[in-house]
Length: 223
Image 1 (cartoon, rainbow, N blue to C red):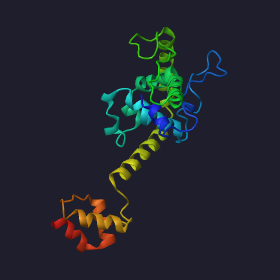
Image 2 (image 1 turned 180 degrees about the vertical axis):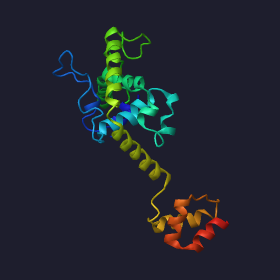
Image 3 (image 1 turned 60 degrees about the vertical axis):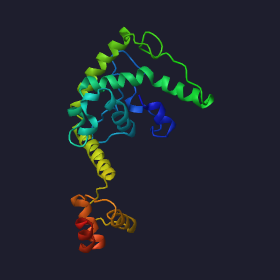
Image 4 (image 1 turned 120 degrees about the horizontal axis):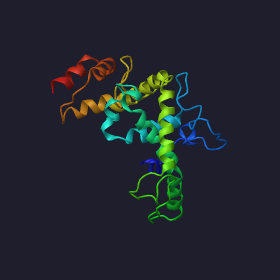
């Protein structure tokens, strides 16, 4: 998992795992393992949940093609109940290990961190042994709870997809039709076109036209 490296780079939300962590303090037999804020109704999602989906749950099963589908489909259409539950189990199983590894490397720069014991593995981290009976039981319960929470969190999944779409547009350099380009962008495209033909999508063409006029657009397209 990428969490330890993300923690060192400041990518992990403060308070993680927060609502995606199993409720341990004050747990009573018969209570849900998941926080009441996990997949809460109303359409909102926490930064902890966003990080969990993007950096952990999405990595559980490579064949789910999360990066390819996250802007097109809802989360429940990409990840199965079992995928999501297993990702939650991983956090409960080894989040404390990630924190121990970070602390060790901070105190011992350049040294390899030892293997720390996880909660539901038979031996220390790195073992190929299976999960303990307790771990399997918790996973089974998490599957049931995730399945139940999904019934009332479609709005939240739609909002999550919109965030992924917005990030995708930003990463691809796509902006609204009414936005213009700053002088750097115009100069870069004009200068770059002298070295290599540039393929501009419709959105970029419209922004360039609004900023620099039709002559600049023709100049770049004709090279």
